[in-house]
Length: 361
Image (tube, rainbow, N blue to C red):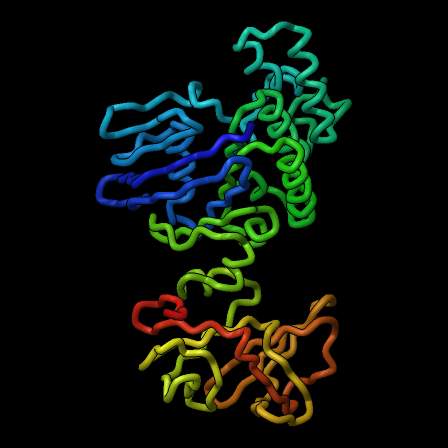
């Protein structure tokens, strides 16, 4: 049965730096939760606190029904008592041990029968498609193969919870894509509750059932990948998620349902907001045409960037620049006149001062 994880009011300081600032979240049994954010946001520190590698300065951590950390009660179980499996960025394989020995090491410490150890090692290698590599040393394998062995070691241990700290960051782009598919399949097969740390939004959006976006130790949003992408809770999340980046257009509410962006006005549900706001629109949600049409605004194509599967077009109107993404190779050329149209249903509105998403009362 999959294991839930509950984190309550967790705080961790390093001197005067607050690495984790009063973070609370509930990770559902069997979830694949990604801790996402830029370097220094506290995601790895949070993972290390859950693993028992760091002691927080406040808060509580439950793994299943077991309280593994409580600052108030003076409880801090060591990593070996938390029933966790860890995979690190640097693989952490013993260089003097062959693959079989690397995977079997933790099982031998548990004093499992030799037949069970042998079975677990073979099953784990099969799960990561590394049969036939048991007698190799880590130095005789590529980075991707070593990472698969690190995963096999965790799978053989059969922990209740998988913890992964940027395990794909040392791999090349093609191999990262392959390994994302493997990791997602392994999670599907195992059903284990998984916490995954990354700064790569593609990994977060493609692999997770939940994403926790962090900034400077503060949890910004905990939601599904779709809602993180489509309904970011604030301007930081909106700006951090998406490639190419979201268009953030500053303006002023002139009346309910209409925002003045300076160069033109756009219809959007203002939900009672007044004053200065920011209109956010994803590049793929902007309709572009080389012919004028009702409600479309005339721009000039400043730059066209084809990439095979799609094309990125930077359109300008005075000092205002809007990024548009279209499928396939675009026939639009630089300096062409183009007309952009914004669908109110695809727009998000943010308060300029607080940065928060404006929603219906």
